[in-house]
Amino acid sequence: MADKRIGFIGAGQMAEALARGFINKGVCKAEHMWATDPVDERKEVFRSFGTNPVDGNIEVVTSSDVIFIAVKPQYVSVVLREVRPHLEDRHTIVSIAAGITLQSLKDAAGDGIRLVRVMPNTPCLVGETAAAMCLGGKADDSDAQLVQRLFDSVGKIYRVDEKLLSAVTGLSGSGPAYIFLMIEALADGGVRSGLPRDIANQLAAQTVLGSAKMVLQTGKHCGALKDMTCSPAGTTIAGIHELEKAGTRAAFMNAVYAATQRADELAKSG
Image 1 (cartoon, rainbow, N blue to C red):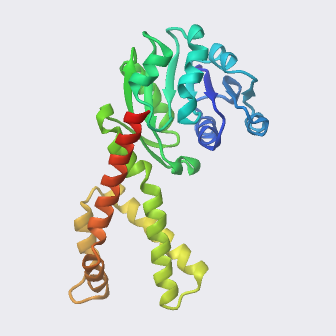
Image 2: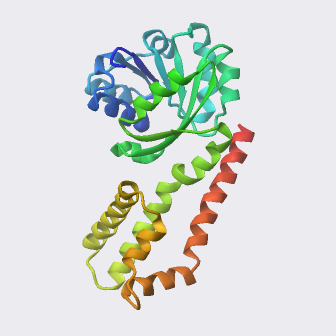
Image 3: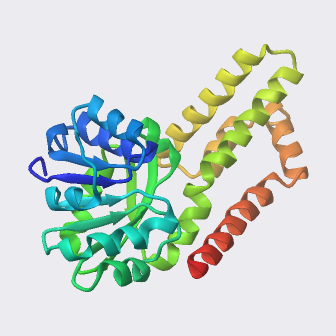
């Protein structure tokens, strides 16, 4: 893995988070990375941590084995058609552009190309992404293992069928915004109850972090963990009762489903 050369077409914040994660976890050396972006400041950011910023997409492709397509969705086909004559069997194309299907990638990149479509989320910026991938073109298990190794350095990634990627978008892709809203609401409740805003924010965020770790580390069902916290006629069950009366559970389910449907619409229109 350490001898793989990685390129980024598009050097925005998500690409930066991936590059820094790969370097920090030792899965790729900085000098084995290339990046390009139309904004000079973004190339300078990549230069600042030891990678190789270049001026063109083709130079990234000819210098790299794994190529991340990290541009806005409307530019993905344009970029792939530009570099198409320079793609070889050694290349693995990893698209992190939302809504761009494997078929669209294949149409632009051509037949016989290893294609991996990934849906990351914004906690990638702090090394805690929840992502999913699907394979297309000539990509095989070795490509999946490669992408798995890379994304394990910035969080977790799971392999799914492409038909499920819209659901991934609705859950983990859009999910951080739901959680930010929930943290804000919990903090507001703390302020309403007399806590200073800064302490309320920290308590709410730490509560979400700790609760998530309990789910992941104990392997227990969320319902069982909830029941462990609710004593008979206690404070927590009183709060849970209010959440149930307000339809909180259904609201979260509806949010995921609505975002999934919208992701499907965007994928079809793209």
